[in-house]
Length: 329
Length: 176
Image (tube, rainbow over all chains, first blue to last red; front, side, top):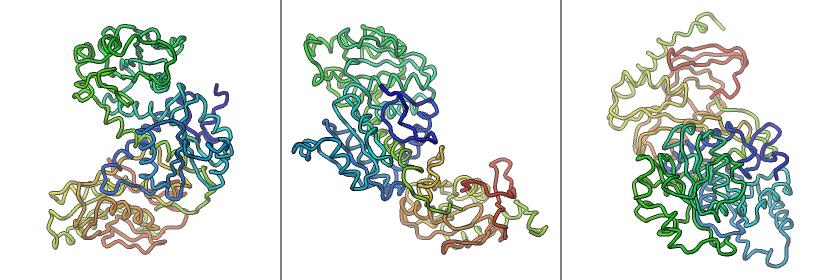
């Protein structure tokens, strides 16, 4: 789908962040490294640094989101950027304005970055191809395709707990078919050199051709969990399901819900992750979600640091015609 | 540049700083003093002096990358180390340490960052070398030595072990 990597500028610096595909290991590592000090900023009395002062970031959300939108907004605000939240349901698109006309209007207001969430795969990529050259586009989730900042915050969380990626066994459980998070994670984990990725779910929720990702497919959760270091649970995306893919939530929980009994097959220090929102008693037991191995809320906190890193890299040098002289000394 | 300036004696400069800081501390309650080194050179120097001072408060390190005034020109350093400051800088007397004081822009950024962590009672600037040519109204209370360099000369501190001062003939890019 992506023929030319428009995510990097001529100097190889981050311009748009649309999908994990197209990035090399060193790029992903540089985002993870950049996020570390931003995680500290959030523990300061004043949770703000002046890095993106004077920049304007627009949150363009065509699809419902609480966590992602608020963490992007907080990330921008903690970098001192100005943030516009555009609720598409009440915007002029309802009056018949086309998407591109709306974008060009926002460009005329001298905005610097669009953060886009859309239910159509490829939407952020389409927008990145049509905006003025000075604008950066960040994909905050497009259809079933990609959610790269979620994948990176998960990689950040994994690295903080496990240090190295190479020898990890990572299990991704549930609705792989509809999960843009799973797709981005499989790309990120592979790029970062994780040796064993296992995906597990009912046959109806595992996409065909998944073996091209180089992952191992399981249909039995206990078997998949043996010796696992990281367990990533996914939400059943009922809003995206067409037709009868599941017998019932109860039966799904029986087979694929993460319970203490099943988690005991994983390594004792395995961490349990979930991109949220969680459905207790559907894909995960409450005792696990709130238990000592759960890092679900840590993921939310880390999401802000990762988004600060991505935004500051994309709006760094070359993003405007600034030619200020002089350096620090 | 004269011979005496070429032969900068690091031990002597550190001794000079140590003496100045010790004098400063005589009038202060050690519990209220926080020593902070600016990453990286300033922190190496701060470590050396901190070892001899026996302060009850931990040594802080300050990375001013997020506060630089040239981010839009040169961007973030690829590996920014997080600042490590002791909790609660309110009402503390801060001894801020850097290796070379030049334009004053690093200290401007450092002060901004410190004030994001709290409201200190005072900030005292101590530097190993002051090469003058300030672009901002900033001065050091404690100085190892004042030197003058040609525009294409720079002093670079390498370390932490062994800690060494080097005269670089061409400007070093992005020297913090």
